[in-house]
Length: 505
Ligand code: UDP
Image 1: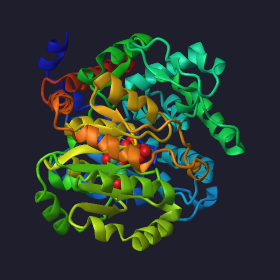
Image 2: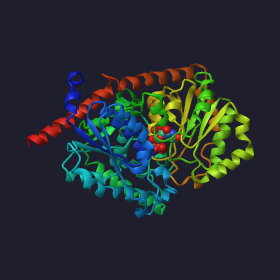
Image 3: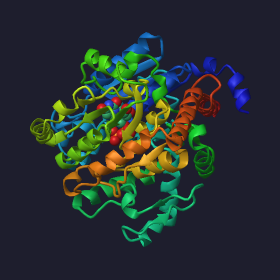
Image 4: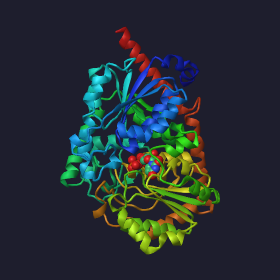
């Protein structure tokens, strides 16, 4: 069946379609949806991406280049109602929030985009054949209903997570567990043991007023997503095939794994400008990384939202230093950046590691760094984007989950795929709660796992070979004839049939 689809001229027919993409304005959600827009437009589908003004600047160079190359992408810019929602004027992205206590305000502001979107919806030509929206924007389901178009959701997570979350919702096994009781996640193809405190917020939200507020948002999202037409997933069959099969069975086949999205960035400029303007001196940085031995550098980055406390940052930095390997350490201090800088200055850290360790303060061009042959390992917080970017790079990973479904992703890397080694974090630290969490990972843990991951013996070599294998699979998946490209064609065909049925009806 896949062969038949592959041989058809999907592109010719797809040019009549128009997908309206509505991302959540948060790097871990917007970045993959921009990549996804490019992949869909490469199949000749017209794609309109809804984006707010400041984000249009932030992601503009990548989008403008895609448009200039001839891809049928349109940008629909809307003003983000930050001030009306109790947010600072220029706060348009979750990583701009001065405090995660304002998360609800951010969701409220996002919901206020409904009216301006509906005001211009009728002018979108041709009429959108479907809406592909971040599932957290539940109001987009109402827009889809109003304009009689399928509501397809994307939430940037793996099929492992989708399946595990579904099974927990149904079995409620976690409700019978104490915080530290290990239990097997029900109904998964592998025996995956976790504790309640490692589960995502929907199952482990905490008791503070803010936690309860977030829980009610999550429950609302969960209820809405059950009504979606289908789900797009940033994953690929060769990576987590058994989980994809099981999840598809649950969703009557309406699941399309069309990743890894980061593979859509083919040239160095797209990789360098993905997600934000990189805060490195490119020339100096490239000179340094080019001078390192192949596979010798550990790249450590904990995503776009995780900010370590100064104490926890110190443990990470000293652990990397003690390991003796060259490293790149991305520093996101958030509100405590000054204290981190103070420690760095007083300790003389940078001076000591000069030539061997590089600090990146702010935004790192992650996909560009990961694609450099000098990088031999990735210390990651296991956001799904970073995890899948690690698989694409073909490097083993040191896994240090922090929040959301990141402990699930750690299990994917360590147990399902087998290219990760856990640093030993034990519990979710919800965003904004770092200060009360104490030190989760000590310098000796970082140093120990760095040595394991860089080990030149048999075990380390096997892990590296496995990582290389998945890199090849990731590359093939989105090429012509690859599993994800076929799935994308199946998705396009599904929407085409749906549209034609609508026209005939
Ligand atoms: N990212 C980046 N540079 C940074 C921090 C993050 O390019 O300094 C990118 C990273 O490549 C990934 C995304 O931002 O695509 C983060 O998403 P993820 O799901 O890994 O984690 P989150 O930031 O949502 O916790």
